[in-house]
Amino acid sequence: MKKRLAVLLALAMTGTMILSACGGKEEDGKTSDGKVKVRFASWDEAEDVDAQQEMVDKFNAEHDDIEVTLEAYGGEFDTKISAGMGSNDTPDVMYMWNYPAYYQGLEPLDSYIESEGADYKSNFYDTLWNYNSLDGETYGIPIGFTTHALFYNKDIFAEAGIEEPTNDWTWDDVIAASKTITEKCEGKKGFSFQMKPDPYDFEMYLWSNGTAYTDKEGNLDGNLNSDKAKEVFKMFQDMEKEGYAVATEKSGTDEFRSGNTAMYVYGSWSINTLKEDGVNFGVVDIPAFAGEGDSVSILSSSGISMSKDSKNKEAAWEFIKFWTSEEMNKERIGRELPVLHSVVESEGIMEQPEYTAFYTMLEQSADYTPASFIIESWSELSENLSLSFERVFNPSAMEDVSDVLDEAAEQ
Image (cartoon, rainbow, N blue to C red; front, side):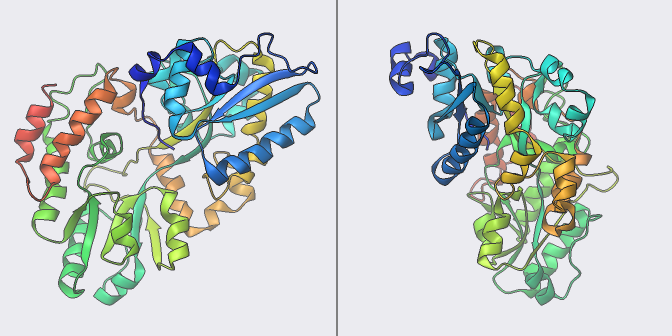
């Protein structure tokens, strides 16, 4: 669900290109038969779009006065949204995750939420509001999320003759188990992690060890290169150096699916794939750092927002309420983790052990603000940090952690 920006490129596009892509503007915001028209932009593709069109059709069938048209932007989502905001042609409603980049073109939704009563907002998990708000204003209604958790291969743990991970494991337990697995299970490593991790995701490990990339003012120096931060990077590097963990090109899912590694940390995206493959796996909370309390996870969250320039805000809000309703939460199960307490309870989500850890991590991860919400130039900084992290974890480099982080903190 996470999308990457091409803001500068997109803002340079002409309005003519947008009109061509969208098939023309509705000057009066109404269809030829007098219905209020609402344009809805999605970033999904293929069969996901087909499912969304069915849900849009259902909304239209239930509303005589509103007609929603689905615009599936797919991989060009950021380019087209950015261009739309630059040419006053933004869809009325759109999927959203990168609020720091787009909030100036979005309608604050707090008054709309308040008008629905306290029960409407409280039915969403609290932590999700943090990822759909900026500077005290809410710009999106949550529709889906994933946190991260520790996946483990039950068959490999049985082969090694050691106990399976539990929710109270620390990284010391992961290291001990990884050593045993690597020694006893030929050709297998205990743990895998990404050689060039996404800095947005990796910050959760720093949070879990009592630090962060930056302070509230956006200062890297003294934070990114703090002793606590260096401990985290050195722990992962040492696991790799000592041979019981492997740094992977991608997320680590491929190595886990093939049975070459026993553990890795990832989001809920891989659950269906692992089930289809017949992998005998379990999922528990991210391990904690000894003496630092509960572990913390980053959230990959998606929301739905309204353009501040929409001519049909009342109709747009009606559609947003429909799209975030209990009915639609249930429709998206299998593609999204439900965001409503009522749906998690009614559908027995917490009784399915592969999902429980993701909701535990959600509860434990409130009140943490990603650096991407603090630093305005995050997109550029993120690219640079990713290259720095690769210098630490790439087996052909393995540069000194302290030197690399001190240099990175000078940006």
